[in-house]
Amino acid sequence: MELLNEGDKAPSFKGVDQNGEVISLDHYKGKKVILYFYPKDNTPGCTAEACNLKDNYNDLLGKGLDVIGVSPDSEISHKKFIEKLELPFRLISDPEKEILKLYHAWGEKKLYGRTYDGVLRKTFIISENQTIEKIITKVKTKDHSNQIFKELKF
Image 1 (spheres, rainbow, N blue to C red):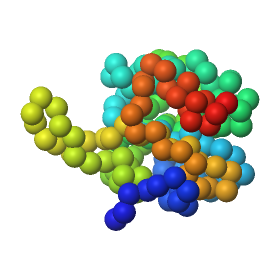
Image 2 (image 1 turned 120 degrees about the horizontal axis):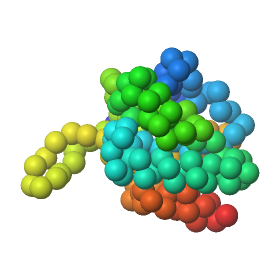
Image 3 (image 1 turned 45 degrees about the vertical axis):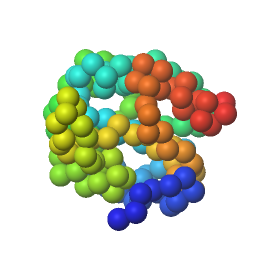
Image 4 (image 1 turned 90 degrees about the horizontal axis):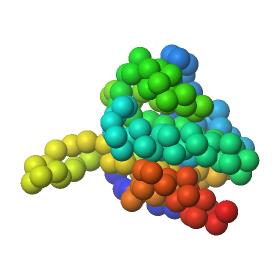
């Protein structure tokens, strides 16, 4: 399967959010979406990224952007993470890693000389017509919203 590139049609997906509701990319037709992939709820980097997006959520919405997070964590874990941090956006549970693999956000990682498979932190900015406008692969967790604004030249 080829890697996704800017300009490609965003792969369609369905997933279950923290409330057990099924959502799909089709629910967001006509809207820009920030689809971000992160490894694990309640870890330092993932918390920093989620809080940065939360702190800038009204600015993101004001620019016509909605936010969806995806990780392999359970719906229950997502619900607790959202409640703890008071996140205003949805998180999709992907324990089977179907969406992660579809977006090439699951793959080989290296840490301390050890190689293993895991979540590759990535963000896709998807346009109103569901094409991939931008891909951010070097996410700055504490300043992610500014990265998004810079990529979109806001």
